[in-house]
Length: 114
Image (cartoon, rainbow, N blue to C red; front, side, top):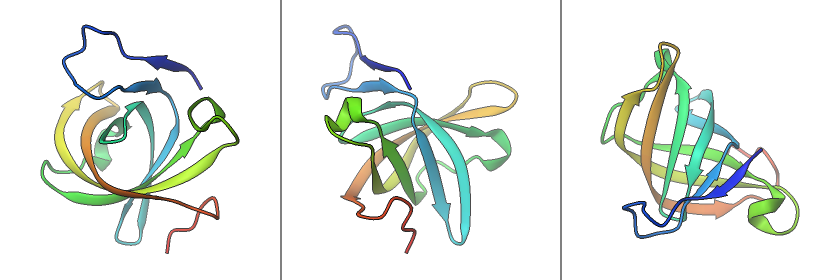
């Protein structure tokens, strides 16, 4: 997993961390595997298979594993509620999703979906 702080020329106000971390989108009883490109306390950009694309404006839950470089201790899982802000075709196989983070909580158990 790599970690990189976005450049000063980036248009966003909040600092983002360029990080490739596992992410699981939760829609109903479906769990869709994905991975992050970058992450801040208010938003996330991630990739998932194009067949699993999510509509703009849709709210959804997701889990993301934060590595020690971010937590400054051990890995931990965060459960988030998000809203899709935009989507873009990253490749024939992947769709990029930019989402606003509406709420989050730190999980005690690594993969507690309930």
